[in-house]
Image 1 (tube, rainbow, N blue to C red):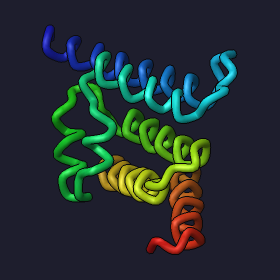
Image 2 (cartoon, helix red, strand yellow):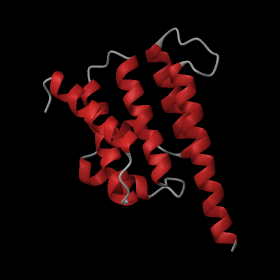
Image 3 (cartoon, helix red, strand yellow):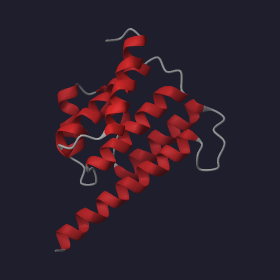
Image 4 (cartoon, helix red, strand yellow):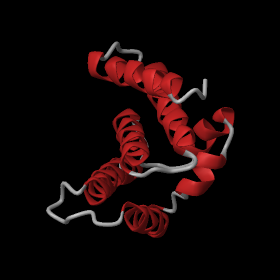
Length: 142
């Protein structure tokens, strides 16, 4: 019972943190995002210190290794993986990154993992997948 409670707390904690990171980066937490690159650096360092999740490491992994990396964290359920994909999508849209496509492809991969894990057809998620596929194709990085 204690193990189950611990896992549930970790899942909730991860969700709260990802939503907070999303708010910080997108400016929806009543703070104005003046320098997206600085916000991204803050996001990465906060994410690493609060959760141990290294965004740079995750982004640099091959697709097959991304799932293994995520499964090493107790707090990632389908909802939190989808929130992370939303965050990566938002990062790619807010910042003119040289590796923009890398963030888009990582988000697309995470949405696919959600579909596999959830085994439920979710219209909103499918719309996100189609939008990301369109963005990736329009950037010419298929």
